[in-house]
Amino acid sequence: MSRWRRHPLALTTELDGEAFLVRRDRDVILRLNPTAAALWRALAEPADRDELADLFAAAFPTEAPDRLARDLDDAIAALAADGMVVADDG
Amino acid sequence: MLNAGAALAGGGALVFAGESHAGKSAIALHLAAAGRTLLGDDRLLVATLGGPPRATALGLARKVRTPLPEDFSPAARRLAAACRAGHAGGADVLAWDARIDVPAGTTALIDRILIVRRDPALPAARLVALGQAEAVATLLTLCGRHAGTAADLLAAMTRLARAVPVGRLEAPTASAAADCLNALDAAGPA
Image (cartoon, rainbow over all chains, first blue to last red; front, top):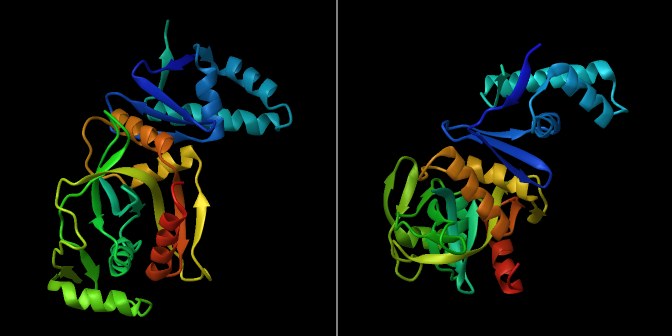
């Protein structure tokens, strides 16, 4: 299973608990929704999808697990599509 | 470059920003009719490094879309008629007036930024406070050309939102918005 990590050129700005992402080499600024922001914080260290899912389940115990998993997968896919996270191949 | 106009107020600049058709030029005309000095009504150069955030006038000709809306105040109508210098692209171009317009390059510290939004359904103008994240997100949509990268732009808007109060001004008419801005100035610093 792939491990994910933050792209080394991605920069974070946090304001009022929200997060904006930008890459130094691109002309796009992202405003993260709460799920994506939580994912970004969780990726302070590389992690695989199952580790992230466990983290999310612990952080959001009242959320339905399948919905949480779906939101997590969507957030990973979105951040990967924008080049903010990359597979950590060691 | 910010899609904004500004009026001088107490030594600083009261910036009113918004997308096209938000009513910036109409608001500027109403402010001018009330005796305000303007740094511009459509584009401002904003700097956030090397000191407090400041706005610089570009010396662009003010314009107002025609026909004038029915809710224009009589004073604003008279001023628009008196200053009309030409017509282009569906708008009257207004002559530069030393009593109203500051020369290009004039700089003022930004006291407050208001994102203007016209809503004819509102009974009166109202001010809505914005959190810093919302302020940054909104200001980013109103930025035109900028120096540097997207990262530089985000940093600049973040500095701006942290240093200056940013709110939203919702009003049914430009006249109501201008009255609200004038009342803000009379009330003192934010």
